[in-house]
Image 1 (tube, rainbow, N blue to C red):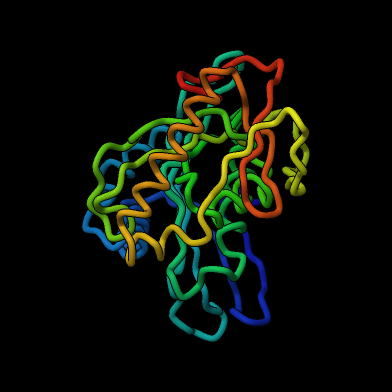
Image 2: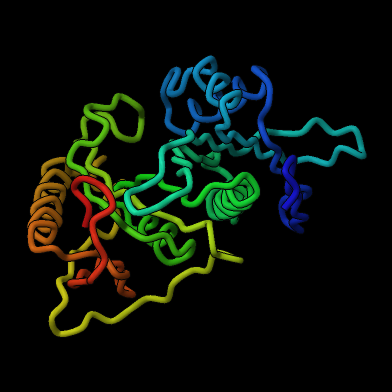
Length: 267
């Protein structure tokens, strides 16, 4: 994959280009996009982002619009990732993806997957062994996207990972997160996973149909979901179980595996 940009022509959206960020102006574009997506001010400092980029980090900006006709391109997505040390048992550096987002009106059009696969290609070309990131395990669409579409592997559950957040999506919520790993070294093309059926000895952890809507209409119930799911994940963790996949009704399947923990609090 080209180090500088990845272009995909969509019949519905026009020309889509993903370009690597290099300059403070690029960092400002990414920061502005994140603020719009998460409905918050200064989610990530452009100055910190620029410092990270100059020290081997990843930043990308997604544009829609055709350059050839003089049309001003619109920024519709972005991603930012930090260089991290090798995961336990690994030799090469890890790229930790702190945030990747798409404007609400462009969600569901495949742009998020384009961003992540562009990030994977960049990591491959730049010598990273793995990519990690976190997501809220209560959100079904996130679980489906990360585990099934991308094929990432859950390696950890962390209670209130970020502490209290004040953005428009997470305000008032406990920021429990699962940590996932996407292998880069030794992989030619990252493949997704199929839904799986739980074996008789498996543990199944359910997800609500739409936790994001529930948080707006019934905070008591959404908090109860967090409490129940947290207890289930932490109990499974103590029992040495790991997430091995997702069922067709978006429940996590956990079983015993021979693989060792890779992070503190890993499943």
